[in-house]
Image (cartoon, rainbow, N blue to C red; front, side, top):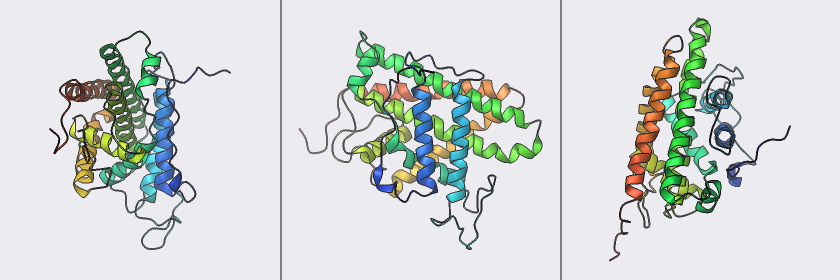
Length: 297
């Protein structure tokens, strides 16, 4: 079978942790691969986000990634916990399973690998459209994707209401929705910055830190040295702010767990609205005057 051409670059390689990749690095790679697969499924932007669509399959991959990150939390590189005990059980999230912290670490580790297109690729993907039209198309497409992720999560959790023992997996599914939606929105933020000629500065890690800060603050990246780069240097204030934002998103995703298929509809609408509001806030900054860096006149 011949696959359709991809309109997104592959996940960015981060080579310094590959030879000795631990659970978090492996989980981050899985998240980045899942996002790349989801975004690159249909070049025309009409993703199959309904029943049986790619969103459900991708979500299951990210559930596994969150489980891997959770099991690795609080363990050493060989998978032992703080008391020297190992675990190979798929449902064992380990003694260090703290959702806000695990999801924040996973999102931060995945961010430099996310497939953010530059301005040239974006204009090639939307030929004949001006900047405003491309931006609107991106927002519509990514809001549809996050809505599909919410619907897929609601569909998976709905089935668990009829199998009570499987409810133990519910926190992992809500965590997977949180990190996957956040990763898609970070890609959207990066591409909007690229489109408007205001990409973050630095290497992949620095840019990822800036876009994560942008996602946390719901504002565009500030220009100049240090602009929006709290997370690029792993500053405690920036990481704590990101953790609070991730935790709030996780709490909001509880609507996905409503019985029957009610959760699917609630989550889809909630995610679509939130992505649209985020894009509006960032675009308002990007379309306004370019802020001057401190010390420049």
